[in-house]
Image (cartoon, rainbow, N blue to C red):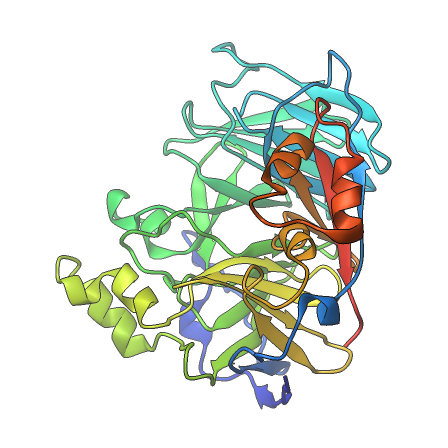
Length: 397
């Protein structure tokens, strides 16, 4: 699959960006360039063996204190794994070899407790672990050793916190904006929250629809303090630097016959009449418009996952300018390798990480027709232990 790299000046975009209640001037980059990612159709001759270079796994240490069943979040910070368990009651940390380090288990209604954590993100710029308890309107800030530093109480239900900058939190609300009262939460996609819990500003002025956001998101945080944000149904990846400067970094040009980008006119049509069946989001998905779900751009290759009529993964190499688009489960090749590398929860450098339960994979081996050395690897895992973390990397392309 080929990709042509185009460079365009950043112009005419200031109206999309940040403002705040103090009317201070926001920053918009106007002299940088944008990389155009030309997304073509799936190459039918591509196989998973063409893409994947190597696969391994890390067994997370299993002790009475570290035991957990499954996870809803996995993050990496300073060569440590941070895990939010599936029930949202516990955050655990393990070293890069899987040795258990420590955990937080503070469920309750006390001042330093939470009812249930429904989100966790590590911030490599400030070395913080950020957690959200939407049930009690709390955002909890921990250091990398999981020591509680601050609890921020908000007057709204927080959803996703993606960064901590200059004593301010960057928040993303993935649910229906129409549920919010008029103000900054409704006006912007990303919100700036101070340590008193007040929303003081925002970034990216309403590039996502107001209705039925479907719980998806596409954001990432970087060690240099910048944030990447790909709006739902959007074709532009925005970069917000640590000092608040905003610029588009990538534009996706959907050139394949099966994939399309949503135009401004079509976005406005959806907003104009939510009850019209032709304007429902799923109808646009059925037509092939991409719904960004996750972006990893902390290493190489850059990986963007889409949920549309089918799950699609787009890989782009900044070094070569080449790219691939494929369906992780329908691509040709070894079924075990496809299963192990179909998704990722974290990226560090060239490696991608995804948790799995050994006993679940072993029980599914006949159904998915697992075979070869990867089946041997799965069968060698401890079935009654903590989940494993699969790590894999792509071949250079």
